[in-house]
Image (tube, rainbow, N blue to C red; front, top):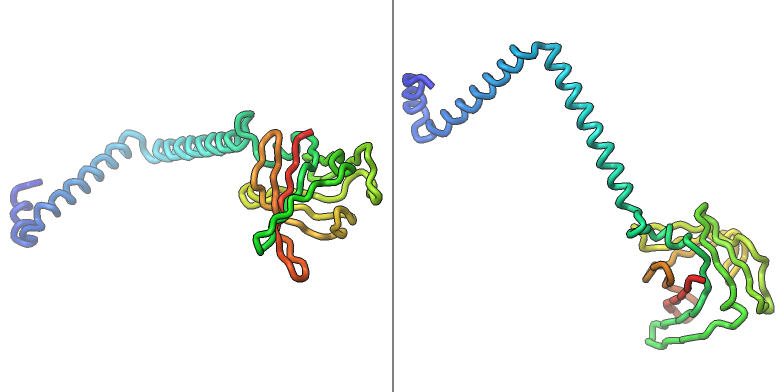
Length: 206
């Protein structure tokens, strides 16, 4: 910067003159760089460079999105939905925890332990009853739809017919307490006249 301009900054701005001179120097440098780029490339060249930058950023965005999708589900990190639909399940136990602290470790009837449940990938839940019949076994086949919600922490079932004490149209939402390749643990809160309890169901892979 010419010396007479430095003197003007010092006289007018006092102590702040040095900082302002630096800001002006930076602005001048940026202006000179812009002029050089314009002289080298011209208007068409600048437009072409801008298009290349936009295309590059777009490609990078697609690549990052693809990486995120790959990271969501890999052989080493399956999603809850893929684990649920990865094979048939058998209902092992149901535990009831009441508000007063009472716990009921009620054992399932043998006729229910050999029933097989399947969470189909297309979103249906089916049951196939085992060799030991219960007195009121409903028909085999689809009885609800299912989906995993709330960042894979909840299992939502909507009953399409009367089944397991629920009527068609009922929506039941379970908390997924634990889920791996061999075991599923879900729970829900049940409110009945005069009592409230937590129902915990454990399923094992067949």
